[in-house]
Picture 1 (cartoon, rainbow, N blue to C red):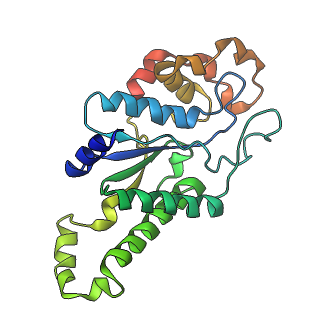
Picture 2 (picture 1 turned 45 degrees about the vertical axis):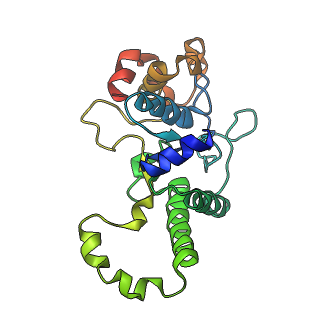
Length: 230
């Protein structure tokens, strides 16, 4: 973005969106960056319909080695304790710029989003820490107890909550009314990639998969992926 575009986004309170994800093994047929690519591509579709500012994607979340060891497979694991300080500095900088409508969107491990998983938990905590830090810098210690905050609870009930300046969301709701089967590199995610980023899928390698979780991948279709991405 050019500076005048940044100022326009601030003045009009555009959503500023961080595609958040991982590099994780997704079978022999699919790109290791699938979780992040899904967010990027869906945001690009949304950008055609609404004024949003899309930040450069962050690919280096906590993939874990639960699916496969990294050697020769490509998974990158950066733990939550390392992610949180980075995320706090990133969010704090965005607040300093002037953004007040910041959103991180994640697909990785979001079937457990309410309970939380390492990447989204790190960024959620970092967002809160960044907001507290920013408010203390701007308003000084004891800012919440000042008379200017006397209407805090009433405003909070009406939705006027500055802790909403930074939020973390799943790419899709856990309940998708049957439109999208949650899985890992199976029919669901493979279909999503066929619809959003077909070059990230190589059907010629379906037969190379050996894991139970990829057994349904050959059943994937662009049509199913399109239904999920609407």
